[in-house]
Amino acid sequence: MRLTRRAALSAAAATLAAPTILPRNAIAQQRPSELRLGISTFLSGPSSVFGVPGRNAADLLIEQLNASGGIGGVPIRSVVIDEAPGVDFLLGECRRLAQNEGVDVMLASISSGSCLAVAPLAEQLRLPTILWDCGTQRIFEENSFRYAVRTQANAVPEIVAPLLYLLRARPEFSTLAVVNQDYAWGRDSWAIWKGAMDAIKPGVRVVAELFPRFGATDFSTEITRLQALRPDVIFSTSWGGELDTFIRQAAERRLFERSTFVLPLAESSLERVGKTLPPGVIVGARGDHWFLHPTARDTELLKNFTEAYRRRFNLYPIYPTFHMAQALYGLKAGYEKAIAANGGRWPSREQLMDTMRGLEFRHLTGTMKIRDDGQGLEPMLVGVTRHVDSYPFPVLDQMILYPPELVMNPTGTKGVEWVRLLTPAAVRRAPAPIAWRA
Image (cartoon, rainbow, N blue to C red; front, side):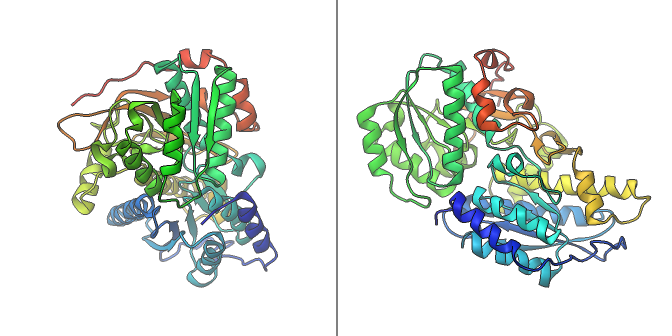
């Protein structure tokens, strides 16, 4: 499956020709008997190693929320759909949930191509939609949406923060290669990295731009070329099962011994690949998400969630689980604020979405704010892998929490253009690293 920008936008345009469906309770403010959530994630295919943990977190947290009274006294019921069959299928399923299942809110999606198509559909259906995981920065830069917000950051800080970390950890590098999946996210994230790198450290020679197809399972051609080129740095924003496979195949051929790897999305792979991933790899967490978070690990909220998730799924939570938690905590905070502003009455969907903008709420590792344009702001956690006896997989050491004002472009600007204005001062303004502690 190749989710290109052209395919996503054409699919979204096709949906706009269909009749507008007025959703349940769009005008009335009567308290419903239940709050129906649609959730899209990858339930099959190689990306399910990323998507299923998001679904698992939703199941666990919805159960916990319902045990404590739901949202605004209303119990939550979720309907989960698989994103894997592609954009056209996903749009059809979202429309089915709106028309036949009567969902009140949609939580979508993982793929950037999916979100580029889902956000316009949310406007057509007037269906409140929380973009819970996708990374593309273009959604709120290229359009204005009333019915869509994102409860996480986007590609710009997710890429800029690991670059600043690299420039601090290994400022002398002079050659670099990229290995990214060939679809919207892979191309966009490389454009952000290249623009920022050229601005802060001009003169770095890019020796290879490799874009294996989305869904690839064999990276021998790319690895052979990288072995021959021997770049100082190898950068990859691949994710899910494909990143796991790339890591294992690169380790088998000792590629990690020859280059410094920067993997902005690798936090989700640590437990799966284990100590196949050697020490010294720069890893991003797509936000400040890490069950051993340097400042939040001892809070009751994070500890209780980690223990409950471990008991139920026999795994440690990874950043898709944190992203799902942010979406649900944000939705709860938004409803509660909208209910209070509405004199205790259940808000309309328009009142809910207006409240979501400017909302600040607590989540598992800190506090998040949603900007007026619908984009979430959060710190970026980046560290370097280290092997310790207490875990069968690498932990993160020398962690830096980059504040959003340092790595996120302001409202009204475009990330690809903003990163070209960065200077070496951004590297020096970063907070001090926080060492691993047992």
